[in-house]
Image (cartoon, rainbow, N blue to C red; front, top):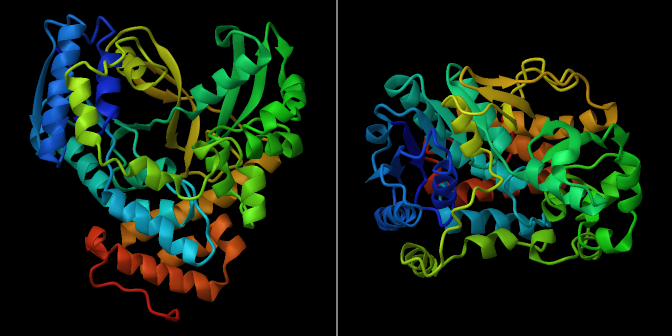
Length: 445
C-alpha cells in the first residue's frame, strides 16, 4: 500500500480531482490518502467526499485519514502533494485592490505582479517548513507542488531544501497543446511537440504531425478574428514573436508591459469573458461563500466527482514512480543547464521523464533568443521575490516590485515604494517573519 499525503485537502476541487485520478491506476487503487488542512470544517467535508469516491468507484481497499497536523500525516508517506492558500480571500483582495490605486491593474495576480510577489512572501515560509519536514520524516518521499506562484515557490523550495525530491506542476502545457490540436483539426496523440520556458510562459518551439511542421499553420490561425477575439494577447504574441505560449490570454496580459497600459488597452486585449483578463477576476474566483453547500453536494453525490482520469499530471507521475507505465510530463524544476540561455539555478518548465527511478528532467538547450529574453526579465523578478522571502529583506520586496514589467510600466519608483509599504502593512499578519522589518519611505543606502 502506498501512502499519499495531500496538504491543502480542504480545497473545493483539488484533493477530490487528484484522488479520483490516482485511484484509476492499478498500482495505486489501494493507496492510503492522508488528508491535511488547517480548516477543520473543510477537512471534514474533504473526508466525506473521498469516502464517497471510494464507494462510487468501488475502491474497496483504499483508505483515508484526516488531520490538521502535517507532520503526523508525513509519517511513512511515499508521496506528498501540496496546494495551499495562505491568507485566503482577505489577502487576495488586498493585493489586487491596493496596486489598483496606483494604476496596476491585475486580473489574477498569482504568478508575477504585486499579487504574485506578495503571495510568494506569505506562502514560501510554510512550504519550506513542509519540505524540511519531508526530508526529516519521510526523506524518500517525492513532493509534488501545485501551489502558485509556481516558479517563485519552486525556486525557493529547492534553494532552501536542496535535498528534496521535487517537481512543481501546472496544467497549462496540456491545456494549450490540446487547444492548438483542436484548432488544427488533429488528434493530440498524433502531435509531436516541444515546449519549454518558465511556468505560465513556456514556448512551443515544435508542433508537428507525421513530420510536417504545423507552426506555419498556427501562425496563420493566430490572425483569424474568431480565434484572436477569444485568445487575444497570446495571438498577438504569436503574430509578433512566432511561437505559441502557454497559459490563458488574460493571465498573459499581466506578465508584460504591452497589454494593460490603459482601460482602452485592457478592453482591446481582454475580450472573451472573465478568464480573459477582467480586472480582479481572482477575487470573484476566491470569494466562495457557498463553499460548504458545494462540498456537501459533492459528498452527497448530488454533484458527482468525475471518476474518469483527467489531464492533470499528478496521477501519471505517481503511477510511474510506483513502477507503472513511465510518463513524460512538463514540470517545474531547477535549471541545471537544462535551458542554456536562462540563468542556472532559476526555475524552468521543461519535459521530464518519470519512472520508478525518479524524476529526470530533459535538457532543452537554447530557446530562440527573443523568447529567452522575454522569460529572463520575469526570472529576475522571481529571483528577487525568492531572496526577499528567504532573507526577509523588505528592500528586495521593493526591488522585485520595481522590476516587475506591469508595475514598472505604470508607476514611478516613488509610487512603487509607497505601494510596497502599503501592501506589506496590509499583509503584516500573514508575514510573521517580517514582524520587525519594515520598509522605510526612503531607501537606506
